[in-house]
Image (tube, rainbow over all chains, first blue to last red; front, side, top):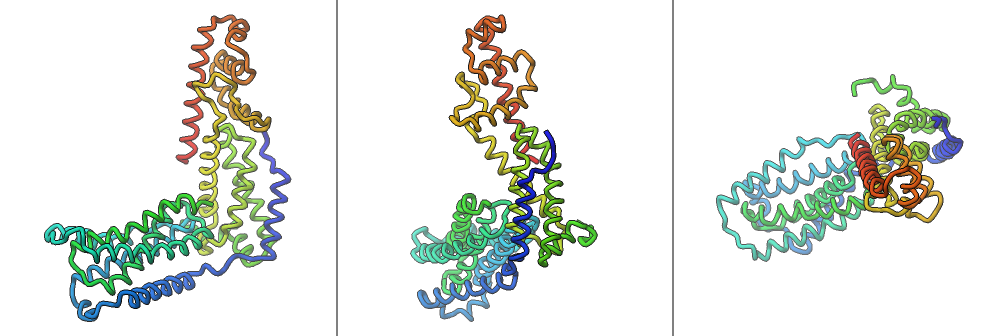
Amino acid sequence: MSLAPRPSTSQLIATLSSHMATAPAVTYFTPVLFGTVILLILILFISIIALELGLRPDLLNALGHLDYINKLALAALTAIGAIWAMWRSARPTALVAKLAWMAPLTIALASFAQAIAQPALTPNDQSGWACLAYVTGLSLPALALAFCYLRQMAPLKPAWSGFWAGLACSGLAATAYALHCPNDTASYVVMWYIPALLLPAFIGSIAGRYLLRW
Amino acid sequence: MTANPHNDSLTALMHLALAGDATAYQRLLHALAQLLRHSLWHKMRQIGAGDDTEDLVQDILIALHNKKHTYDVSQPLLPWVRAIAHYKWVDYVRLKMRRPTTVDVDDITLLADATDIAAHNSVIKDVTYFLDQLPPQQAELVRLAKLHGHSMNEISARMQLSVTAVKVSLHRAMHKLKAMAHSAQIKAEEE
């Protein structure tokens, strides 16, 4: 069998080239636009939380407490890491940096350790379910938007890209929610924030397996 | 990658193409097609799909075209091409190996369940590569039983063997073919 190129390939190349002449490369997936959309989504989330639930009245005061900073940082750093991972994983040669995960992982582990030391919560905490519900509820539409973006890209591992997208959305939502949530104990963080962060991520990874192939 | 991207002629062609030079793009695609053809050829033969090489090359070219905005212009071109080619290659292997019309140890009926001739012919071509790797007598048994649909009695008469011997030998041959196809698939996915 020969390695000679088939005429149909030359035809295909001619077609692709003429397409190139009339419609040069897509230029709108720039980092600037990407960052702007992320910021707008965060602002939207915060607005929704502020209007529906109200920001916590002692917000400025709370920012001085380590517990609160811990909780806020967990959500924010998860969001930043996941957004970065999603951006990189959408492109064929960019490697996803593992060091990005040191920060949120450290906080999560620290929270676990603290929670074990002070087991003071029952599972039937109403506000915990609200946390889970709001973070997930905000995440899912944002996840749909993220998928619209990812379908235009070329993720080599579709399930992972879906996972990072879900985690990015839940990270942003949890950051917004943390501006309302009055409960700062480590047990609360472990019992409600971490599942709230992970649930959209897993939904994203399962959806990604099917929807992000190309 | 430490090579200066501008020393790489293919990378340079891609930069020209992205700036709107359709001729450069055409030259680039022809060069990439040839590279892909060569690197895929042996792998495709190993899974008995040599004839489909050009189809896969075309699929990869289309993917490169559709996803060219995912190429980072500050990086060399070939790693990006290779990553996309590998993705499509793994997809192709998965699709190919999942077809129901491949060797089945328990299936004594004709290999090709498919009713259309094209599928039948391409299954035969896939299997031929593996058949060549069996001992001659076993290969002949498989051909007579599966590809030509002879009964056990006919084969026993033709090859001067007892029906039992035919069945046992055929069973062993089918086992080997299945193992060959399976390990070729694993090897292809590992690459």
